[in-house]
Length: 248
Image 1 (tube, one colour):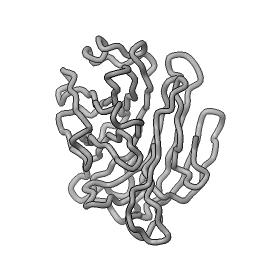
Image 2 (cartoon, helix red, strand yellow; image 1 turned 30 degrees about the vertical axis):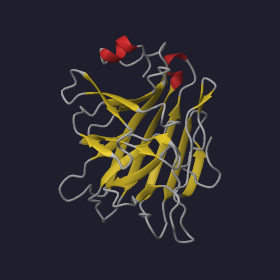
Image 3 (cartoon, helix red, strand yellow; image 1 turned 180 degrees about the vertical axis):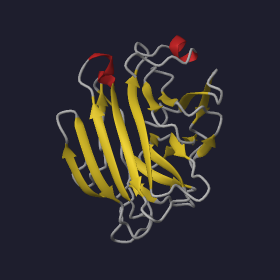
Image 4 (spheres, one colour; image 1 turned 135 degrees about the horizontal axis):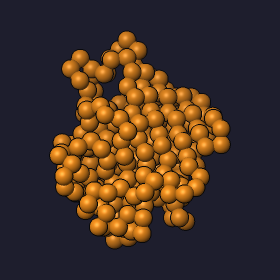
């Protein structure tokens, strides 16, 4: 369910009868024109310097349904403290049946114009609630030959992981076997950013796009597929073998 106040903000997601995300506002002193909100779908810059620049957050813009299974959003974060004023285009595609019913596809495009961004970018931040359940991040190592895992607990301010082949990662609940796979369809240079956030009490690991020398240029596009799973869809044996579920 999307917020009525921010076109980019996803307030709630329910999968198989379970609410899997949350929102929250950190207790920070901000100008009257700003609202810093943690939500599923944020985009922030790194390094945060104690307060990240918001590419997607406190956004203004338009939300429209582009057919029964598509959503298109145009937004900008105009906040005078932390906002970037960068135009952002986000599109979603949803799937209605078969093995693909548990996934959605997202494309996000950042239009920097003539002002190249020299910050590393977290292009799309998924949030799983509660953080104490989804505290494991599964991913292939840098060579794509073995399963590696990270823990979000020590990374309240974020941890960069370079031992990753850039293809996919999963926010995982080891107690229930549930989680979310994020599979990249982009090939740009990226690291893995491990994180959790206190205000929303969410696990918030994401892709981290590494800025090239001289910055990103006039635009950046990131394509990702999000796949919800449980132990029947993605058993431990398939995880160890680095085999993603059918339809993901």
